[in-house]
Length: 325
Image (cartoon, rainbow, N blue to C red):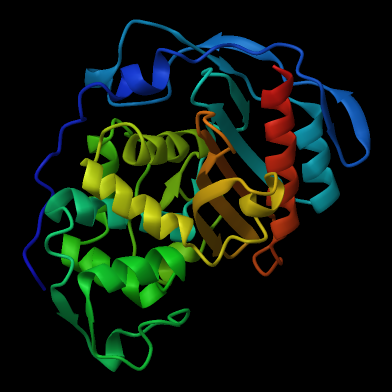
């Protein structure tokens, strides 16, 4: 294993200004989903998203409080628990439902792992070969299976575009272990997101277990900071966006809930207890600013099937809310 460590353990300057200064409250948003209409999300003044106290500012950031019958009805329809965070990065308007609650990350951690590789190395070291054995292979590894060596760049692409679990473990090993993802999130100003285990154990998604969890709001803002907020170099941003736009695992989730022709850079995650997640930066047609969409869901029984259509429906509802604001 290479001895590679994150070089910046302190939050990057300016992230709070990028993410917080423009956020606006929303009141009385008309929503329609599951055959209902006239539902609303209630706006309330709230502090900035949770972060390290050393990086917090004194400026309150208006945000939308948990609420909205439309998302509650989606939960009832799919017999699931739902967390939604959407932010129009142009207007700063936010739609949120249980966005500050912890959900299991599952494979969404891979976007942070790949970003950490790019943050450490840029793109210059992506040709480096990483060797592994058949003993390193775990279930859910369509790209790494049958090989014994891949380039670091190909491992990043496999992790993001095919959610290859062995590739994810190899990246964690390269970085120095799961805790480096926690540290990387902290460097983005996110003191909540944490990774404690490797594949496949991190997908256990046990209710009430804080290991390997995040919140829809924080990981959504982390993604924005990485793809558009200056937390990565320009070349790193371009490479991360290219990989995520080429994702093959999200066609039935956020991508299915946005209008035709919109570009989506996303990372999915799935696990026990019917866990189905997707976090994306969505690019509307034309010159409109991108939209952060982060949707996490789970169910109450361990062997429950997940519902990708729930994420698509929640995406559509969130976009309708932003449009109505």
